[in-house]
Length: 372
Image: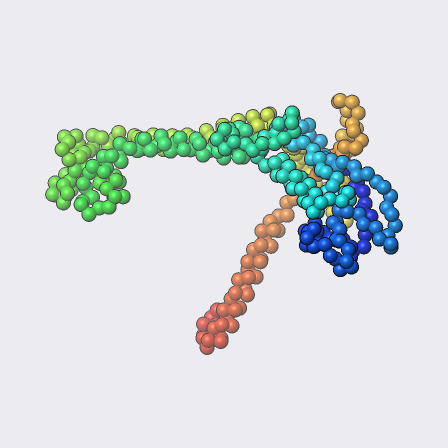
């Protein structure tokens, strides 16, 4: 909904004496038109003998205001956009037809800054790009709690994986020192638990299966591998517990805490919304009545609110009582079934094309088998 004054109507102008801002006729170097007169810019009013002089009307400044009913207290909200009347109304003659282009560019640049990840200076009503290095995750949460949770997950998961890497380092080091896999093993095999322990480069120390459980931890050591197995297994189990604990805490505690904190710090449409459940599946007995479900529901809520006493003075009559009503309909899987029928329809035509190709190639037996 926009609250703005109507732009003044441009005077009636003959089509053959107007050039647009992007046409070649607006260039001052091209001074000759079809009738020997200089071309005229589109934002310059032109009067011909067939046109009547327009009434003098001063262009009024225009302000585009999105009526959302929300107080502008959140840093993520924006101020009204003041648009120069030059963009919409006829203006005095300009040089080289560049005034409209500059006004459009200014409006476009401000719209870009307003709708981007910027910070607003309320004193100067200006916007500045946020720093890549100094913007915190909490500040990014102003543009959506999911953005903050995404970067929180990346940070905490990186820390957890780093801790797990430290826990796996002792086992990785001892596995690389072993020779159970033999001299022909690649790097992946030599750094796995299948290479841990001493058996000799050619397996000469492990001549019997009974020796394998009692092999030494690494060449030149008197410590048996079985004496260190509980330690390495415990480190691996601890790493798994750390990962699962992180997933549980992040899902059950951190997400709820961040969502609750962001809801308290920022003003969003959800703060002015009501979730209503248990509505009837259909409205009325005819399709025409059911198609008016949204309008009837909006009227119902408006009557309820009008009957309630106003807390802070009288309501503004220009503001809607209920801005919007959105219905989440249950079609009983109709959309999914429709998409499934579409896939079957495509498959049917593909098989028909295959049968036609087989008949053309003379493969009658395969074609008849495919038809069945």
